[in-house]
Length: 241
Image 1: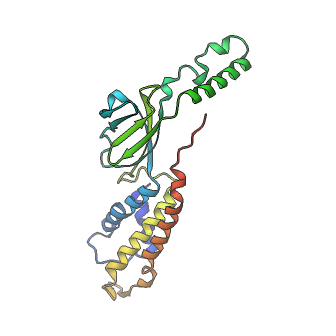
Image 2: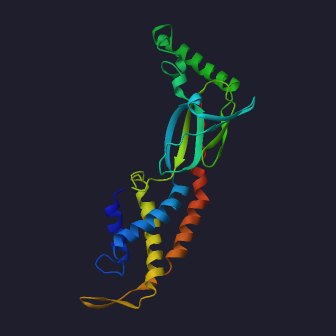
């Protein structure tokens, strides 16, 4: 997401693009509002996902029993914080060749259909024998793994807060992010500008239409409640195989 375009769009929507407001730098005030308020809320309901592949030997082990193992995730996320861990699974690097076919040999030997049937049957049997890895994440970096019996290579799908430069806001997120940011800026402007009846300019006094901003707080609450009612549906990992 382009920061300059975001600020310009908000100023145009709020009707303050050509008005001198009582701020030393209105763009900085808008940006600070978005970074301190909008970014935190948006990261809760629409975080940035990244997948990491680690060997357990590369993680700091805190505890190990016959039932579970406790580790610290690496502190490599800079200013982004871990919101939650969405999924943990055995790494596909443990699967050789072309997945569960077990290498390229089946393509060269015998009937491919028979090999495919055997591979699928073997996969179903493996899924019955080897239970899926389960986990419990504790803020900020502590994770407990259960059923670690097949491999020490894992993929971790981690939900992170969005970067303060907004590069992690994808095109499909931009409209939702703008909607929340716009309401946050309107709420900030209303709380500040309600102390002014009008603003002097080179063209005379400007009468501010604050009633257009006074409902921003309640509209924001409605939007967040709508996200709160649905966001949990997006964080449940889909298990297949």
